[in-house]
Length: 344
Image (tube, rainbow, N blue to C red; front, top):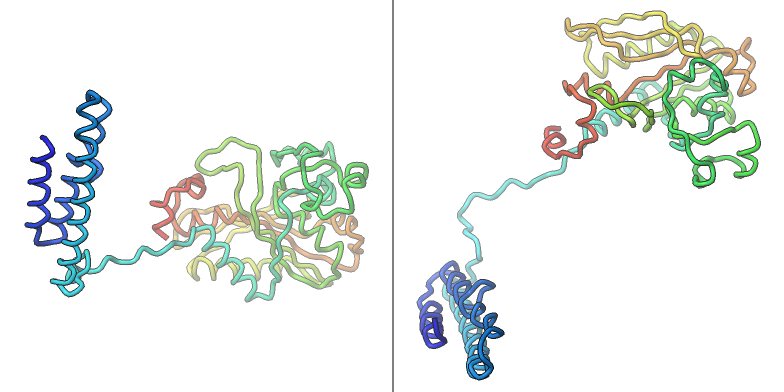
């Protein structure tokens, strides 16, 4: 198609346009990114130099002319339709797309609210921890067989900012009781950190992210969320623990819930218990490890275990969310798939 044909058809298409859609079609055909005039200009490099000198300037002039016509025609259509917009105002509006809270965020907020209503304080702690707080002070010294229960991410000592550790200085850290650096395997280190600077009675929870070096599957991830609880006072007993935990789970899952407490072992409590629940006649589910704080833990923070006692517990927030929302695979929480998140 030569310039004259392009000019004739392009001008006619613009003048005959009666709607914005028709005008846009005329623009796309003539001077759009894939329009005929644009294609002609792109082909100039393949033409003989004499033809290029003749057609090039004329094509440029035509492009300017067509663009001016397009602008004037658009102004005419706007004036004719009294400012009609480029969309049909009579069409039903689209529902606004709103953001969704991640199910773990929802569970975390609910757990905080329930325990706050039971007069627990909510704390947070560092994710980069020391061997001392993560293991030693919790009655799991080096060489203790219980360390095998936690598959640990150990860190290179000189690559971790000291500010994350909340310890006096790096040299003192590396050469003292604090030991090596790691990603915390549970939120229990905050038991020690809190008791070092506070006197009983108190009751706290510590929600946060934890890390385990293990293979991933439907029920295991290398990072997950946990909430640690601790209550210490002169007369705190397992009866207090039973009341608190049963109240928590009833608020979380409803009144139609049955509990089972089984003996278990955790190095930082004695005796230790596992808590199972059965919801609305379903099957038994293991949901929590707990027990009375071990004397050695109190000794580590300079409490007199003959004068105070308390209970501690730990529960996985991921596990609670899987039960409450019927999620079959823990890996879905960390997939980044909006089809999953948008359900909540």
